Image 1 (cartoon, rainbow, N blue to C red):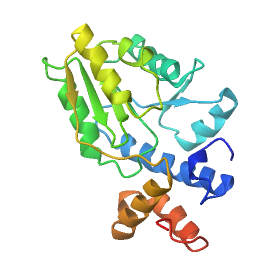
Image 2: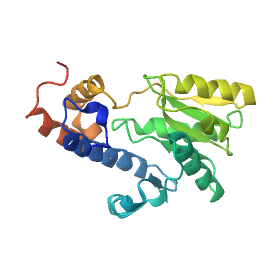
Image 3: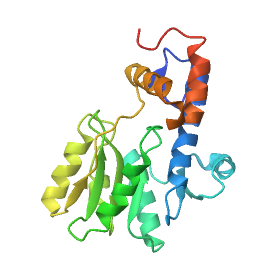
Image 4: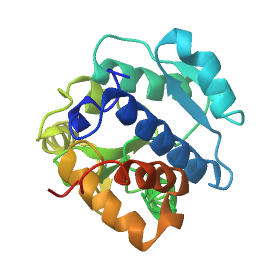
Length: 214
């Protein structure tokens, strides 16, 4: 509380935001865990929270995040898995609880094609929900300032500069702000099975709060 999903406060309290984010993470992990023939990792922070993640995701190996910036931490996680002998390597964000599993499958399929060196899943806010590579391409992450509206654009500029051939997946959205919460609420009211843990928490919050769209 106070560190997770702070841009959702208000309308949520810090504890409500943290509880919602824990449910979102649970749904993302469930989607990833169902991918066939994939080694599973969670890049976790802070170090003291590793026991929590081991309990939450017992079938996942836990990687401590290393580095000060998000760029450093994301690149470090990708590179660590690559050094472990895994290829291709894909990282997916924990901000999109209803991301279709077929998008994740498409990422690995794209990297199986020799004409692609990397893959990106673009977000509507200008970032991305997924990045992957066949062999390490750290410049795609380390040279980009994260949490800006042009992360995807800046990443593609580096790819063109370095001759990295990038496949792009379908557009999706993540949960950062109040408007995203309203969209998620509407999506899960129509299909709670898309993210059952998130739907359960969001339903409880909606009973105590004004409609997020106001």
